[in-house]
Image (cartoon, rainbow, N blue to C red; front, side):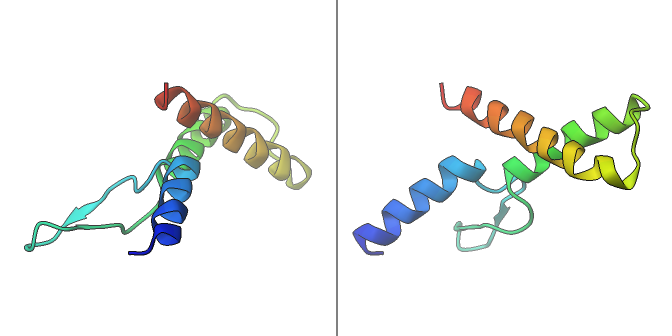
Length: 81
């Protein structure tokens, strides 16, 4: 892996938190499959918002999604402390 590839991997990890559910293969290497921790956090935040009977018309969807990712990003930032 080149230095640039390593740098890109570190940046991607910091932005997404890495994989939510990494899979271990027999050779003891981690295979990054599935959704990122960022997407998992956003999905959980959105689930909580929708469970509280907020208005969920089509015009509200972009606001809900944006809010979920704002919360996910805050959670990722807190994990890095």
